[in-house]
Length: 142
Image 1 (cartoon, rainbow, N blue to C red):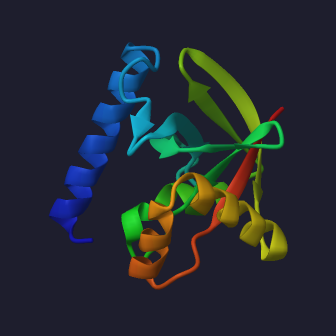
Image 2: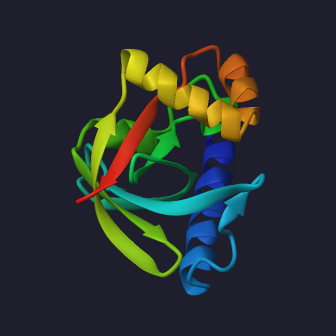
């Protein structure tokens, strides 16, 4: 993504986070029919917290999130930050929760991604467009 595209993307994410938080999740809580949470994770280099709206899928008392970046060939920065930590914060509606982060691999990742595809088939297009395997993380309440 070029610099202008990155700036537009970052501005749109900030606006979505602000709208979600201001409305306590009544607005901007869905994307293409799937539920959205606000994920806050510290930057792996800066240590500063970054918040992004992310589609999620319920699983085993926690939530799956997919680093799709809309089908971009590069993994999103927020997912790279998840890889570098074992905890984050999610906001769903007006509730915030500390979560444990576990990036899934192997058969665990494949089973989780199959669930994602069952609930939101469009992720297959993202994966094909990206040319990479979509990373999946399980966020579990602490």
